[in-house]
Amino acid sequence: MSDPAGEAKLEVKQASKEVKESENVAEKYSAMTVSKNSEMNMGELSSAFSAVPTHKPVKKQIQFVEDKQEFSRFPTKAGRRSLSRSISQSSTDSYSSAASYTDSSDDETSPRDKTQVNSKGSSDFCVKSIKQAEFGRREIEIAEQDMSALISLRKRAQSEKPLAGANIVGCTHITAQTAVLIETLVSLGAQCRWTACNIYSTQNEVAAALSETGVSVFAWKGESEDDFWWCIDRCVNTEGWQPNMILDDGGDLTHWMYKKYPNVFKKIRGIVEESVTGVHRLYQLSKAGKLCVPAMNVNDSVTKQKFDNLYCCRESVLDGLKRTTDVMFGGKQVVVCGYGEVGKGCCAALKALGSVVSITEIDPICALQACMDGFRVVKLNEVIRQVDVIITCTGNKNVVTRDQLDRMKNGSIVCNMGHSNTEIDVASLRTPELTWERVRSQVDHVIWPDGKRVILLAEGRLLNLSCSTVPTFVLSITATTQALALIELYNAPEGRYKQDVYLLPKKMDEYVASLHLTTFDAHLTELSDEQAKYLGLNKNGPFKPNYYRY
Image (cartoon, rainbow, N blue to C red; front, side, top):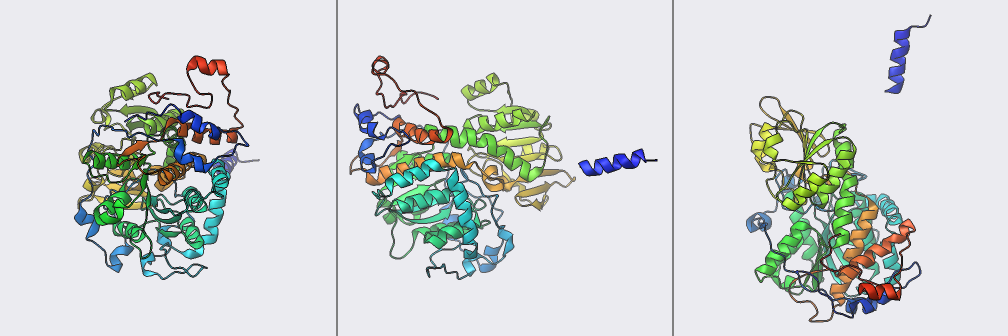
């Protein structure tokens, strides 16, 4: 006779300032309307649009890190080998790293202590291991498959070399997707030197692949704080090469050049910034009359706000949480701090999994939106003892304080999806009475004297960039916008842009969006002459006024 209990066990085992455009700007852009076979004349790009400076009131002052902390400390060799746990002002806004071929712990030797040479005989780079270049090349080739719009821009413009003579220094996340952007800039004529804006987001193999092609990259996953600033300095300060364009994510590179190399900074022709914190820093400089170069605010472009923030975070937040915690989120009490575009994306994803989601907000408009979308709006102190997960999405500082962390229940998860790593007061957790226990990569248990454990992800840095991946298609949209902004600033005639911060014109946003429609075989309806006249529009756009809220 068969044993029912044994069979059951067997079964179980087997189953286990707004832009004001000139009247003729639409006509100038008409040559750039997008169809599958349309050609773009990059020579017309510079004259095609002229943005007007925007003067946004800066409500919250974002303080720079102390110059003493940034500029005066360079570590001993031993000190460089250990991962710093101190909080950083470094930018943490876009791109992925979790799929990196090697972890930073694979080789304890600091890249700064190695002598490496690529196949061309150059040693003007500092990466984890140049031997990983072949694997990194395959990663880049995979990313190119879902970045067809950026590749299309590269093919259309490379014969004209609109960035010939441009020396671009960049500080972004170094991933397969940003590598496609960097190689596009090189294809368009630029010379590039690059460093990472996040000490955890670099894909080592991709950094090696870029270095192998001749791009000077100074970055590796798991840098210390001192490594971070050393890498930025090596990008800027090199003999026989002087940057004239900046592509920044978070403002650290811009601030470093402004403070340490003011003479070089004054010769910059343009800055392109894609993050909330970086844009705030630029507006601070502009308001104080200290911004001596024109800057383009890519962060507030419609395509960046909607796609990189809303749609990207809607997918990547779950990826980061699942990879690091293996937690089931159905029924979990989750508080999302902030209901901007990032917060909206996070809430939509968590709600779909059955989480009970509450919102904290300072803005009554965003709070009302949250209510209409079916979320409770609470103060964090009201629910802190019951919450299972806290996700910060504000871009502010000390959104989750030590007092609140003290009152959280055992096993709670705390993480950040906002821009900087200052939202969670991680510094207050580095005290003798608390014990830190590394569980797995980017996952720490912070243990209280009574045995309570709080799970902290990525040491309070950006979850999706440090712990998972970000959809390549979304990054194609952001990267295309960045490339066009660099082309515009570099080719703009003298006097078009003053020493201020500018927004991309609506027409440029529409152009970036239209480049990506072919991926979905989408076909736009065209206005008739009568319809265009009735609406007071040019048939080729822009189709919405600058004050329109999408």
